[in-house]
Image (cartoon, rainbow, N blue to C red; front, side):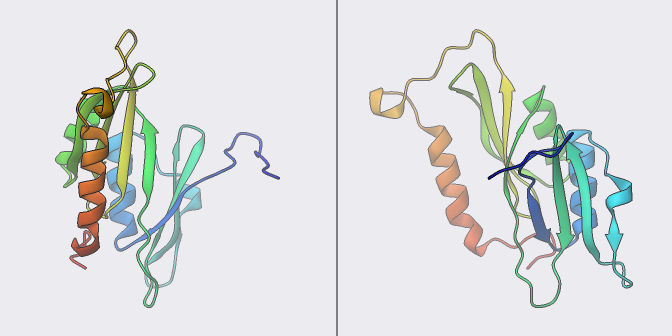
Length: 164
């Protein structure tokens, strides 16, 4: 059974990357959220075994990849007030727009970005009054699936922020 702690979320993502401190800075600056400083846990060599940022009611937890550990970037979804602003902030810090802002179902706009650590971010923003798109099987376009498919297939050989 799932339990939701008071003031928290039942599910919080944890990513393991090279240069965890860099990712913490990226997320803080791009999304405008502070790091939970008291959660930062460096090892004696400065490697971060734990860091957190509070995004809404969820904690994004980040750690440095240690020798012998694989990198484990995430597929992350976040609601933002201004997708274009977030994409611009992210691009200035090395992220790539994967899916341009696109009308999505339920009066929302969807965009995606890939950060330098290979985390793929789904960005959603409310778009009241925006009509739902026509599915590609009814003659509409398919940028939402096509851009995701192309990006995920390319990640197998793409280096992360440290060139690995």
